[in-house]
Length: 124
Image (cartoon, rainbow, N blue to C red; front, side, top):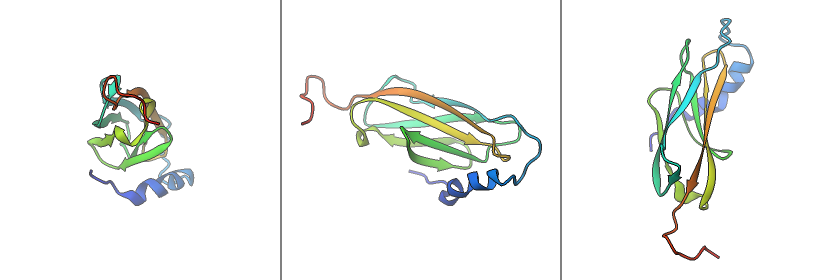
């Protein structure tokens, strides 16, 4: 799995909140989750997003529920997610993007994780 600049996702919101790089830009990035493109997922799946902004994209974060699983600062904005790390059932996938002035945009998608074989008894 490719890792972005891990330090950047920690400090970027702090820099943005301090007003560094303010240019009068008030439009947030537009985020679209492009994968997974199915409702039901199993095993390892591609998790990717298209992000567009008139001033550029500074940072993109990928979440499963409230857990940050990946951050990157350059396209393509994609990672792999092993759905076996969560229980079967519904989970929210979310992508949050920041532009250079700190405006944030996000998108979410609910997927159903189904890693148990059909007719298998649920785990105890």
